[in-house]
Amino acid sequence: VGAGEHPAWCQLTAKLQWWSESQKKHLPVYVTKIDDKKKSVVVTFAADKKVWKEVPFSKLGRKGCPLQPFPASKDNGDDKDGSKSKDDSKAEDGTATPDWWRLEKSKLLDKKEQSKREKALEEEMKQIEAKEAMKKEERKRKALLEAEKRKVQEAFEKRKREAEQQKLKEEEEWRQKLRERREKEAKEEEEKEREREAKREKKRQEKEKKRKIEEAEESKKRQAREAEEKKKREAEEKEKAKREAAEAAKAQAESARLQAEIMRQLPAQGLMGMAQ
Image (cartoon, rainbow, N blue to C red):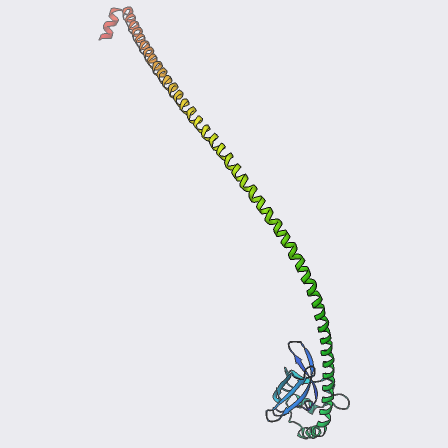
């Protein structure tokens, strides 16, 4: 099919299918307008005639086009044995010259059958509208039932809230009294604790005073002991020095005595020889 033509399966009032990307499925549509000037076709959804889509001729029959033949209308271009001819296959993929005679014939058939198709489309639309009306009535009935249920539920919830509020009020009063009693007890306990702390502080001060007195006495005793020990050490050192001096004098005297004894025992000649 050329860029300025539409395929044979896309005729006025024809039932086709539209691929919905959001719903991921095909939805039935009807051709409600073919605009040769704008080179586009307008389709209306069967489920909602207020919703429509417009597709240019150039996209029809191409890969990725959401508007596609309805499964029941895919056999229009088939041969008697159910297989497509080579000319049809070439025409679909745009590799052959369009069959102008077939297109003109299709246009003539469109004009003759337009009224019939419009009536069929109108009848189907009426059926769809009737179904929609029934659905709307059913939804209205369900809405009324739901509204009645909501009223009953709201009344129940209101009584429930009032009972809960009364219970909460009583609980709040009880908690308030409990808080007041506990605050009073806390104040009394705080006062008692201050008294106990004052007693403990007094005991600490007395104990600290006693400790300082004991430390002072112990310091005096320690100083006295240290002085006594120092005096004793000095005396011992003097005594030791005296003994050492006496021993040194004694040793010197003994050395002098021995030397004199040796001198007496040696012969005079020996002494002279020693002297030389």
